[in-house]
Image (tube, rainbow, N blue to C red):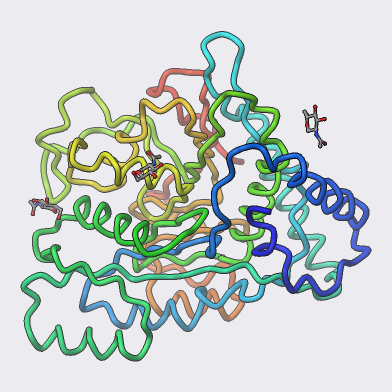
Length: 385
Ligand SMILES: *[C@@H]1O[C@H](CO)[C@@H](O)[C@H](O)[C@H]1NC(C)=O
Ligand SMILES: *[C@@H]1O[C@H](CO)[C@@H](O)[C@H](O)[C@H]1NC(C)=O
Ligand SMILES: *[C@@H]1O[C@H](CO)[C@@H](O)[C@H](O)[C@H]1NC(C)=O
């Protein structure tokens, strides 16, 4: 019965929306699964489906308040109809060598188009309201070691009011030690919470949490139903974000990486504005943290730490706008980095492409699908048009 209670409680009205019969089919098949699973190893039912882990600077209380008042409220409860599982990709292992097969560029393009169509249909024919209670827990990670006492007082009163700070007593914030912060934060979350997925974001990231959750739920259900298909192979573990395989190693500036010497470029990693990890990957990193090399960038570090594992499903998604600057705004973007508190409020108010400042047309980053069939220097030339 792994996550079922979590997912289906409060499912008040199953509708005859355009894929109504599909939902029924899924529910039936999901219901059948647990009986046949009693013998196999299943993890305990996690209390929390998704942890939202926000790495936040101590003084950024304005950002935290903007997030609390906007996107952290989305999807509570989830009022979207189920995202059709047919539109969710499940990677299989190949016969030769047991490598997980990532999605082809054409499949990525099809999937994006299907999502856009689905979103448009929702707007044109709003379905009757359904409600699902998917448990989400958000935490702002903040290091408190040697924190000045006035700031400490503020943080303590903020904690008293919101109870959503993950305070890290062994982390000194002023060292710009984001990799250490990430590890300690994930460790803190693992120790305290039972969860299925974690999304790491910065405190200037906006997430369309309802849509993200909805699709993650469908992915998770599909994976649960397909578990048998993987036989004795390890279940795919999700690493979902916007990948880059040809980023140059920084040799100067605040992100300089003097110790990244094993390659000419960073190993393929999901950009740090936001990425999702399944619990097992978080555990893997925490369990081995004493052996892992710490690089300056936390996102680069994560990509490198997960590089050798063959059960990592790297889901490259152009809906993650998670680079160091915003791409051209698209209403299908789900995770939007580099947003000010005001932009977050505008987005939440329904302005899907809130006025964008400081972004020159000519300098825009181009959006791409990831070509997993080629070497990483040729990863990123298939543009989303
Ligand atoms: C469970 O699944 C296996 C393999 O798919 C099948 O052989 C078995 O009969 C099923 N057991 C039950 C109780 O449905
Ligand atoms: C960064 O944090 C980690 C974990 O707290 C710690 O082991 C490491 O020494 C720190 N590095 C620096 C440069 O502060
Ligand atoms: C991590 O360690 C814990 C405690 O020893 C263990 O239960 C868990 O299975 C480990 N997870 C992974 C992915 O190594």
